[in-house]
Amino acid sequence: MRRLSAILLCLCALSLAAQQMEWSVDFSTVLNNREGGDGQCPDQTMFFTRLAPEAGLSLMDGSHVLRGGVAWYQPMIDNLQGYKVLPTLYYRYNHPWGLHLTVGLLPRSLMVRRMPRYLWSDSLNYCQPNLRGAMVQVVRPGGYAELAIDWRQLQTRNRRESFAAMLNADWRVAGPLGVGGHVQYNHLATRRDNDIDGVNDDFTVNPMLSLDLSRRTVLDSLRLEAGAIVQWQRDRHRNQGWEHPAGFVANATLQWRWLQLDEAFFAGKDLFPLYPQYGSLLNMGDPYYRSKVYSRTDLTVHVVHTRFVDLSGSLMFHATDRVTGFWQQITCRFYIDNVLWQHRRDKDYLRSPKLPSIY
Image 1 (tube, helix red, strand yellow):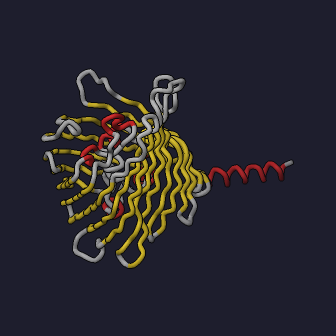
Image 2: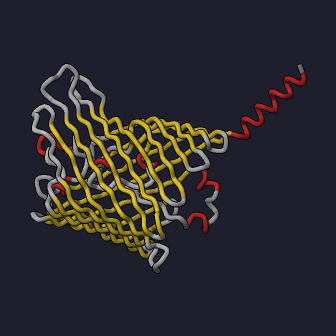
Image 3: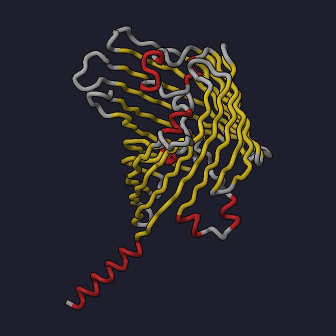
């Protein structure tokens, strides 16, 4: 009996030693003033804060992680209305080889890279910080691939069922050259006991070539990518068949110390032909991509940029074949977790790598 008790005590001690409490706090605030838009992108000012604390338990040296928290979105208005408190609760499996499996209500920030704006608009990223579903990722030194599903709405008598499935990848194939791209499928179904809505489909294929010259120049970052984008959309209720607009997309990112330049270019047909009927319920991308030609240039100054804070100011220039827009944006993201807290006195650790912006 004593031996059994000793064995149980040892097992308990080993179990306690193998587990670890995890926590994080992710705070951000955005002031975005939009001028010079049209009916699709009207003039407006957005000012909000978002606070997303999480806590959880890590087992077996981080192989199994269970975390929960909330994402509190609060617009800056006098009566404090318009807020959202969204739950965050997910399980994550991490394999040493680079395989990650996550299920539940999980932050979009767990994705390797932000989705391009022709698939996810800024407004979506502001107001809905979580995916609701599952994600599988393979992250290796040579690149990554991830498959995710986001169940955006369940079917009720007042709400249409909708979900999105997405595949993202970028792998280095020779030196700085990489191949990858994005595939996304949006599905918008009917409300319960309703035959009027119909069913809509939105399918995107976007192969890309990339060139990462960050380590071959004096710049901190230099990345170029370009490719084709093809959309297939249909309204089954109206039985109008598939519409398939296509075009060319290119992106460039250049950063030197505290100065960053981002350029996004599109040329082709209206990517969202069903947007006048269904808006962002079906097409989650930026409405500017309804233009034949569109250019967005972001000039950003990182006033404070460390591993736990990014305070930035940006000037954003939009130009299409019809209108020009000028946005001014101030963002601040502050992030801290248990690992950063343990190294809070290590200045070299806190300087690099820099905290990425989620907007």
